[in-house]
Image (tube, rainbow, N blue to C red; front, side, top):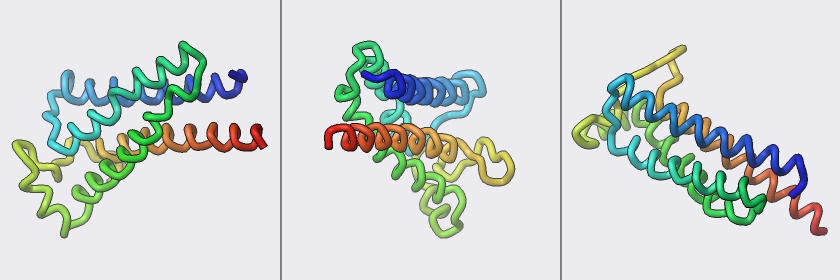
Length: 142
């Protein structure tokens, strides 16, 4: 594996670690109880630490392919969750999400940065960098 691909893979792995630790910080230290959509986002994020970590250790980008699909699905889940929090029409649906309503905003920095927004950014970074590596490989193979 080329050094640049290895560095990008490290950044992807680090992003998944930071997102995982951030979600654990919010729930275990700050005491924020995750809603159902938060749990789905965690289910999609936590394995990425292992997937990309294994790919990094073995220096084999092909091992990480499931991470592309999981981060793509994570983009959809986190963007829907963010819309549930921010759009009044969807906010009503989020009120009956489970024990903790999905429209609950534990944090709201600058009027738009919420926990689902942070998850969305993490999934987009992971997905985009993974796609960029795939594009680089395609160009190399041609």
